[in-house]
Amino acid sequence: MVIDKIGKFTVLGTLGSGAHSNILHVRRADDDREYALKMVPIETKEDMKFLEQAKHEFRVGQMLNHPNLVKVYAFETESGWFSGPKKAKLLIEYVPGKTMDKLPLQRMAKLIRICERIADGLTHMHKQGVFHADMKPNNLILERGTRVKVLDYGLAWIKGEPKDRVQGTPEYIAPETVSHKLINERTDIYNLGATMYRLVTLQNPPSWVSPADGLPMTGKVFKDQLKPVRVANPMVPEGFADLIHHCIQPNAVKRPERMSEVQGTLDQLADEAAAKLDDPGVLDE
Image 1 (tube, one colour):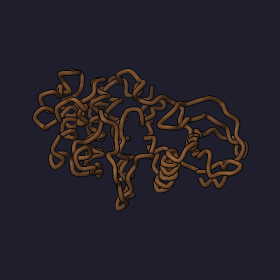
Image 2: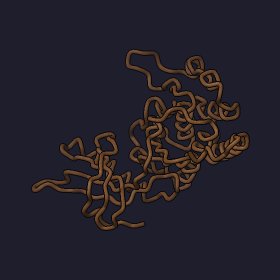
Image 3: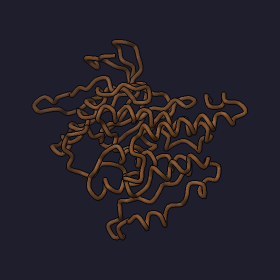
């Protein structure tokens, strides 16, 4: 679907807020459909970086087309009377549901299938030469059942373009991103692994971003501090726990090489878990 102009809209509510932005639930007058509208105020010269980030998120969104990746339909700016842009607006697919950081622990068979769908979306993203760089439960919205979508492409990196800063969220960021500003398929795999660790244990793995007055994180310290998945939650199937630990290996070359490999393993694990259910219909709840 192509939308050339956002046009008039009615605000139905507020969906949340992000880094220097507010997200509204709106209905467009032109098609009477519901959307999410990200509003980014541009008030100072320093805010221009948020304008560029919104433009970037739109450009990335136009490169993607997958049922587990939220769609970005349009980008516009509003100008002041005597100056440049005062506000940027992104029209985004409205997804009814909650971000996964706000949800209780899910049934394991359901959660494995959810993670498989996330990995499938990220596999598509990587095939387009795009790396999310900020995978975390806050950027995943769960609808009914196992329907899930990845949100927020503001920090995504397009292969071959320059990058000059560390990107990501401290609790989920890969060690090589912290030390060398690297973003690639294996850093996204680490981000997903840390996300899965959080979703199955409701705890975060040790962070590679050291506090200003603390000692730097090392591979040995990480392994010493990391609580094994099945110690934190014995209900996690062994194969799923093994995959999570594989994805968050401090040494990047010891992780899976491709997101498609992670997706394939999750698909098999999800089928195995579903086969053990008395009522597979619970996956749709």
